Amino acid sequence: MDHRQLNYGSSKNHHNKICILNHTYMSACCVGCFVGLGCLRWGWKRCTHTGADDSATWPPATADDFEPVPHLCRLTLAVYEHDIRHPHFPPLGGYRLNPDFIFKRVTYQHTQGHAPPYLIYVDHTRQEIVLAVRGLNLKKESDYKTLLDNRLGKHMFDGGYVHHGLLNSAVWVLNEDSENLRRVWVESGSCYKMVFVGHSLGAGVAALLTVLVVNHRDMIGGIPRELVRCYAIAPARCMSLNLAVKYADVIFSVVLQDDFLPRTPTPLEDIFESIFCLPCLLLMVCMRDTFIPENKKLNDPRRLYAPGRLYHIVERKFCRCGRYPPEVKTAIPVDGRFEHIVLSCNATSDHAIIWIEREAEKALQLLKEKSCEAATTPPKEQRFHRLQSMEKDHKDAIERAVSLKIPHAVITNPDDEEKQPLTNKTEKDYNNQEELPPKHEVEENSSTEASNPANWKQLAERLLRGPPRS
Image 1 (cartoon, one colour):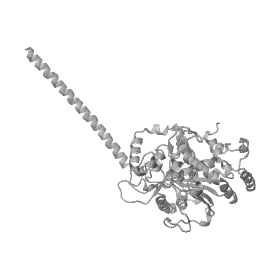
Image 2 (cartoon, helix red, strand yellow):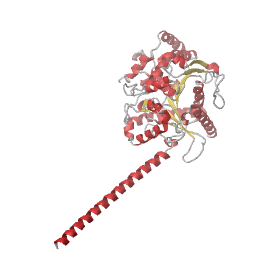
Image 3 (cartoon, one colour):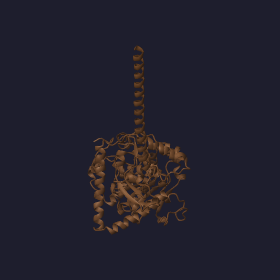
Image 4 (cartoon, helix red, strand yellow):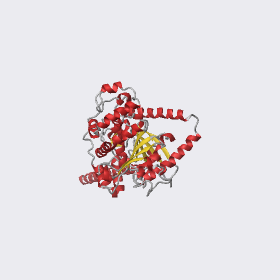
């Protein structure tokens, strides 16, 4: 009897152990299935995420707003040429530029590694003074040094953070040619627009150059803020989110579909150190950023972004071959600002300036056709409504940045910002200067400033201390 009870008890214990093992195995299988499904879902979402998804909810751009982009792309391409009269690689249809309008051309020999080559183009037809900066040259060590000089987060700049190497290049360009820009603007009647444009590396330089000029406009003859524009073509991430939104009224970034650079938060030096294994790097960045919460990204004050208002050219659709008629979407996004790397075979080719110019020209022609078909109001009235809409977009973006508690994002009054004593002027001078002075007074002031040339490094250091306290 005792043996029976003992055998029965041992068999029962054995049975219980088997049941426990079965339950554990089934639980492990369930967990494994859930993990596997989660990985499949993540892989599906990442592999099916296209560049078009980033701007799916954005409104379309207008022909008037987008009109300068193809022209400025060609002007940036002209920086790559040794002689614009005898071009080696002109875009389709040619450059359509007047060689006589080229005021100054600066090469690597002149910059000595301090900045990328650039040219100053005084366009009397469009009434614009354009400073165009070329993109990265993979053969030039100086361009790599600029990218590697990224002492991110050591100093605040205008209440945010910027790429240190690109800022130094912008300061160097202004020290070299701000006097030329001022003189040409005054001699042109103080009415021309001042346009800064660049591609890739040059786009970051142009964007930070614009920030400096906007904050020290009296050093360029007192040019009004509304006459200063920057077009950053395929830009590198060069400024923190609060600055990217703050200057969205003067800086416009142009991105072609899947371009990797505006989407890559990795430090630029890592990208170009791994240029020969770029797909592997992009995959690693894609996986890493997928698991970073959105709030953590937004609350990181040192995370850099593409600057200003974004124009996104979309020409391909998911699971469809070939290119479609390009569309242009525009917005000033705060959250979801090109935060996801696109795993696409076009991620690097979409960064090429020649492709951006070609697709931008196609998109502009389509926008013009649509605007002619839908024209029901006079052009001046359309322009006025569009300007009002853009101002409202900018105001809404700043308010959203504040509501999301973006570090250092504040709602500023443009009138007060215009009068901040950022240079050698006193606050009293700004209070007395309610409107622009007459032309002869501008010339007198400009001649006085010419005798005391600006040191843009010192002016940049003032911004490095942060905005003035209210």
